[in-house]
Image (cartoon, rainbow, N blue to C red; front, side, top):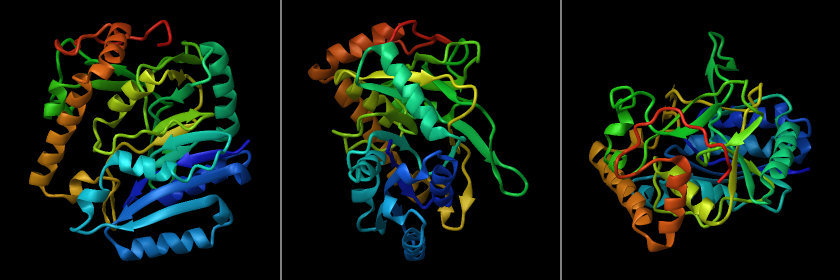
Length: 327
């Protein structure tokens, strides 16, 4: 069974290790295909990537669109959904579709395990449009530079982790986006729960299905709001989300900022001026409001709020909540 992996990237020294790990940990690496839209402000990085692909054992399975970013085109090329869609454009009807970020760690047998889980998930949801989705398990580096999992995986939920908002613990909550979009959190889930659970939110950094779900992307989306807006769009199209409560991590993600030779790992925000960043933040707010006040999405978002037992206007203050049914 062939698997296509959509993996956008931006000046990320974890990009090559991520791709190498995908092949190394797969039971059937010859059936793994990579599609990427990769940005960099450094010509030498793009040249090195091109050489790496050309000399790779599975070079025929790797397709990367390399784009040099400068002051003239950065506003045209920056944006997470532009990267997601650009990577997904290389999908060629493989049997399965996996969405990740460019800084991921794979578990052993990840390909056969995800296929097994997805098959079971469709039987559970009775919906052909089913997505296995979670926040990838956190990984880090030991003192010799080896990558290792520090968690199993994260369950995404909506709301605050305490009785009141904790903007000190979660700095991004101070952004204006918080006033229009429910805050989302993630934490490890108990292994005592079933293997497959209702997922409360779509996550681009780890999503898997036997159909391509990256389509009709809103290319105005920048970064923070991408998962929330995509959640609404997919629900509207009849998709069901399933959380994989596996005992061993299958997909990991690097959440801590790491400095590399080209700048800051996978952080577009840190490559632009503060004033420009603020303009993007304002754009993120407008993007969320566009859906919240769109009559076409009124029923979808109302259904989603009712399912989660939350209220956007009051800002959810509940703690842990796990739905007992699939949306």
